[in-house]
Image (tube, rainbow, N blue to C red; front, side, top):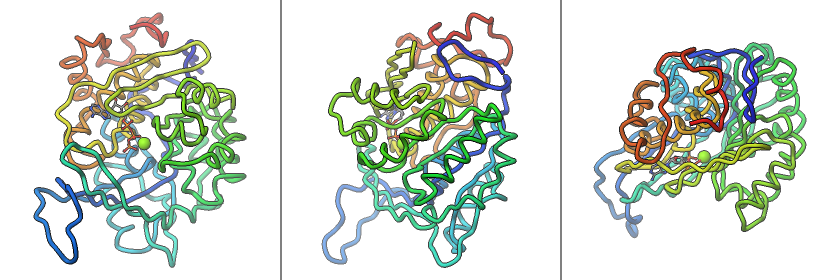
Length: 350
Ligand SMILES: Nc1ncnc2c1ncn2[C@@H]1O[C@H](COP(=O)(O)OP(=O)(O)OP(=O)(O)O)[C@@H](O)[C@H]1O
Ligand SMILES: [Mg+2]
């Protein structure tokens, strides 16, 4: 196993890691631009409506696949048309959907997102089948064989957030699998209470700032980060929308700006950031460069409608970072794996 100083451990350097993305599977229906819901039965013409595979597991899966990962989706969807559509969208990006559990009598989770002219995204959400995931639905052998386990939206997984998730994380730990985790909902203190016994098995926890403050019940970001680090989690990555991100661990504290971008819709920016960070870590470019890669992937996704917009592949994100990030002090990301000198594995190097 390769351990990067002050960063999460990875099993091997690879450009095409095997990633199990477990958790929230959601079909997003997005329209833009929306300024208000018309009164009564009024109707408004929009410029664009799209559907995407989304949610902190499925949305991240799509971005990971685009960036070069081999992705196995795990989670629960319904036996309805929404579930079929969601699986089809994932498969079109090469994601293995064979381990998605299709639950009877419950709808597939979905979100309606009326996107504001400035890219903000209020949401109407149904948790649906995400809350029905159970331990027997999960292929522990596939997790043991993975390079990375990404857990997306544990707080919407119902009773799975408890002993079943503990078992999954223990399997990952036992087999040296890098574990990342992100949240889906705005959250409250009950989320951290339930996550607290599990976070020591997580290498990298990536809530957005609102979620971080909500789950800790604190008003100060530094105090909130410290409260989460006290659980034993490896690194906390706090995404802050257009204000960028913070990456904080035992001996790392980085602040990254968001990259300039003509923003259309910020849905899925967090998922793209997570995917970029995972790919960067697996390529061995270090935590610092990996976070910049995440910011680049996110800035591309912000430029189109939906969580899978605009971003095409790894080179696309690297080129975008080189184009718009140089003035901000962004590091150069090597296109070729294995071309990084050993010292560059230090997350603090630039
Ligand atoms: N307006 C923006 N311009 C450029 N980059 C952005 C913008 N908004 C977000 N980003 C990038 O995306 C990252 C993640 O964004 P954000 O904090 O909004 O995630 P999130 O709330 O988890 O999103 P989601 O849950 O929809 O995936 C930010 O740290 C930043 O790098
Ligand atoms: Mg998010």
